[in-house]
Image (spheres, protein in one colour):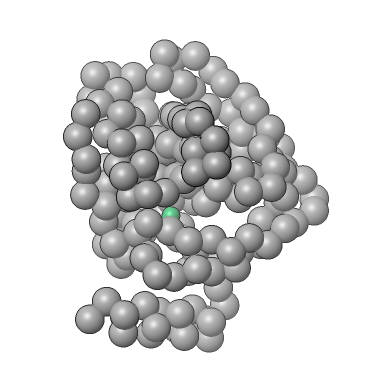
Length: 167
Ligand code: ZN
C-alpha cells in the first residue's frame, strides 16, 4: 500500500464524471487500499477516486474511526436506490478543498447499493452523518463538489476566501 497525492480544487479531476468499474482488477484493489491509507493519513472520513486523480467509480468511507475502531468500507459503482423526503443540513468539509466548510442540505437518510472488493453486491441504509458522507463521496464520482451546492453569491464568496488562503 502507498499514500496517494490528494488533488485540490479546482483540479479538473474533481469536475469530471467517473467511469463505471467493469471488473475488480488488481489495479482497482490496489487503488482502494491506497485510498483507505490516504484517507486515514489525511485524516478524513471519506475519499473518492477522483480525489487521487483516478476517474473510476470508487470511494472509501469510515465514518466511525475517529471515535471507535476502524470500520473501512469500500464502495464500487455505488448508487442511491432510495432517499428520504426529509432533508438535513451538515457542515461538510472536503480533503480537496482544505479549510472550507460548506452547509449542504441533503436527504437525511439514503439506501445505497454497491459492489464490494470481492465483487459481491451490497446494500445498506445510512442516516445522519454517514448519509451526508456517502452522498458527498457519490457526488465526487459525478464531478460535483460541495461548492456546487451553493448559490452563485455564496459560491463566489467561499471561493475568494479559499483562494486567498491558498496563497
Ligand atoms: Zn470531498
